[in-house]
Length: 228
Image (tube, rainbow, N blue to C red; front, side):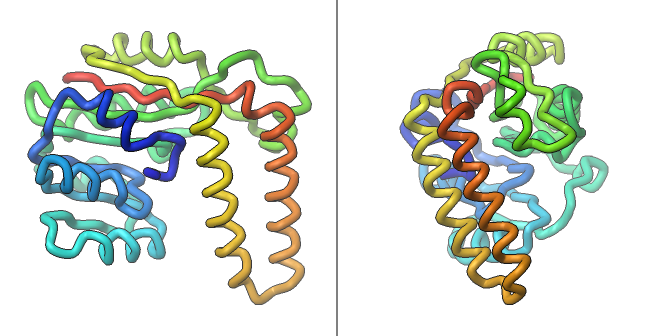
């Protein structure tokens, strides 16, 4: 769910706030906002440049006070809007690449929140130093993740008060990888170009091999709730 290893039960444990309004940046199919709306009658807005995902988000939010936009995110487009909660789960790359991603996401989300509002952010971290073999799957630009504790320290450095944090288990990662691969396989099956489809399917197999051999013990995912 939420296009990440995060589960509903994990959100229940983490969420100490019942936001009346929220924005989700990189919202995917809108599952987070739909969950918030179902739990707390939250109204809000989701932004993602994937038109197919936004179409799913809109079809799943009938009757709710939610709006989903298929577009690239630019904080300047929302400078006149304030939300009680700003969320970005697994999409910090929208704000910047590499080691600046989490820092810029935190800075970019603060202006979107009301005074005393909340930021919910989910990002990867290294559970241990990644092996050179594992990093090959990322190509020439391996991700510049930190440790879970370093992510927390960055939140403090951004002038935010950490309310709660949680780490996804290996079992959550396994479930996410399984669901994500099924989703990608279904998408690849719609590609008419046989060569292109075969290329993507081969990479997916390679990714799964690297995940099973190295990734599940190396890559973590943290969820952090902070107050502005």
